[in-house]
Image (cartoon, rainbow, N blue to C red; front, side, top):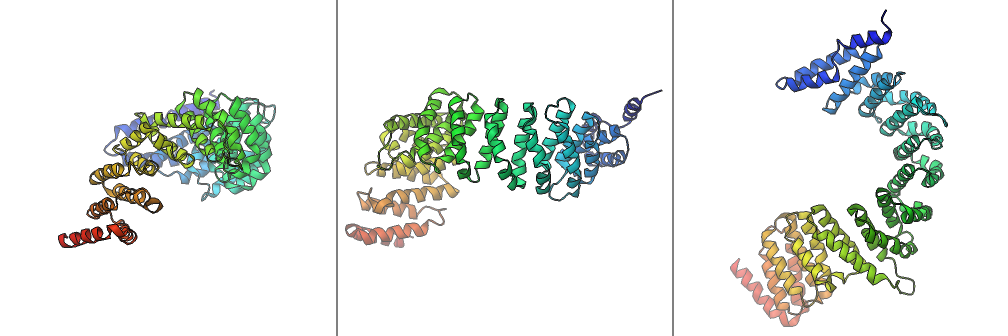
Length: 481
């Protein structure tokens, strides 16, 4: 006599498997929609079978079709049924189908999973291992995808209990799941904050990394709430060798600096050490950017600054210059963003380094409009009384080749540079009138015409010697146009 499992396997042999479905879709290119419709009809019949082997096979095929854009919301109850199967292979299919097919906001079936998920979580009891632990792992992953406020409230105690599990596999999954729970059930964060904070001292580095990730993501909303964690994160900054975790640590500490300016002076040295030592571009950029943020808050109440500020500024400038010089467009863009942050505290950096000015001007000719726009925003920090005419003439050349919003940005930047601080950089106002005449003839700068007209009248009103020249140029424009 055949056992039940042999009977089930024999029955499946007469059903299409996922491989058969994929092969059929590939071979029926002319009538793909018809072929899929026929298979969905077969799947609906198979899902009514009491046999978990047949039901899970059908659900696996339907999950694949869902990834092609077909709905599977009508099979939500079948997914929950397969989730309750005693076999791990079936559970895995059911939980995957639930992750993709259950809509937590609109499907009432989600509520039916509460007791099942609670049972799976409690199956991985403290001190337990084996199949129960991996079943709990499936439940935790599913919960993070279908969590609602009610599910979060019901299952939060079980999740927090699993933070004491001896296996880091469970602890790190629970930590990551808690982030999704807090998004739906914010009150849960207050109830579990101390437990998450304790995970920063976990014995396993992967659990610490997950705790750092969760806290960093949560801190984006209100960094001030996480100031008490600054000592723990500073300890990780100076002791961890995990680059990916350090990226998150640096980012969080940088967001805390505006909330606690005294932290800026303490961070300068460890951040500078990271910039000097690391070869990882991602960590290098985060460390440099965080340093530029710290430089904005290093002044003491008496106006003095730490003695190492010039060295730190030079380190940041040289590192960002290497980013801008890189052939990778993403790194070049990040370098320009970093310079923008550095210039907020050190506005004369570009003036004191001619090679930096050349790089920024070169970026104005880049094919990527986002890079050109970022470089354009830095020009106001480069302008001086001596080089203003040269910069404006270069920008006029770019206006002719530009189009769309970038052309308008160019015009706005030129006017902003010339009119800053009541025209303090302009020596020859007749030259500026000629620039305004040239800009008035540029097409495609809608929205800037009124600005140009106001500049013209303001210069003619303020600067008496240039008034006759401005009137004469105005008459020339009226006659010619």
